[in-house]
Length: 247
Ligand SMILES: [Ca+2]
Ligand SMILES: [Ca+2]
Ligand SMILES: [Ca+2]
Image (cartoon, rainbow, N blue to C red; front, side, top):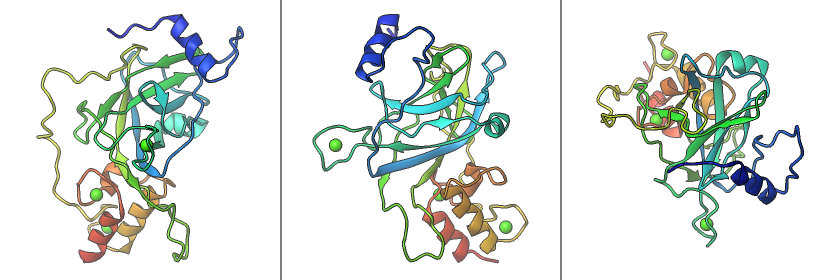
């Protein structure tokens, strides 16, 4: 059973300290506090043919036990065109008793907020690199925000390439894992250190990975390509792999 009644929305709103007033954007995502156990997920929002088309102001966020556990990604005019999103998910801090978010290995739910209709689409589909719906599990790491000795700022939050799927069903927007469970058979996990695809493995490939890691851009190089060693994660190991395999 996954029924949602308006009263649940009122309860949530009151928990968040929001007064229910006519015309207010009740569904709008409000970010909570974060922890140092983090994972960035980044990819493209894939729309089914009947899905609402994101516009400036619409949002994506991650939820765990009904609570927001991530940054709130808000579409701009530009990102509404590319449908690229990126959001840092905050996990449980194992050193505290309180459960602040998902533990490593637990499932996180992604939701889409459509501003024009004030509707929240729950349980977005999470797609593996073969484009199949799979059960995304949190895999954050506790990391410093940046290495101070580097000549440029970069955070070391691991990035998981993750495309999301949106349909027109607000209660289950493509989140169900369909019939055949994804055994990942179609995913090519052969390392490919030529990230930018110019036929050579150079420092430029490392730079593209760092760009994705910093959350700065995956317009040119998708996050999935930046996962050069194909372990499902874009992190410093991919950079090291490029440097070791330079041609
Ligand atoms: Ca905790
Ligand atoms: Ca290259
Ligand atoms: Ca990797």
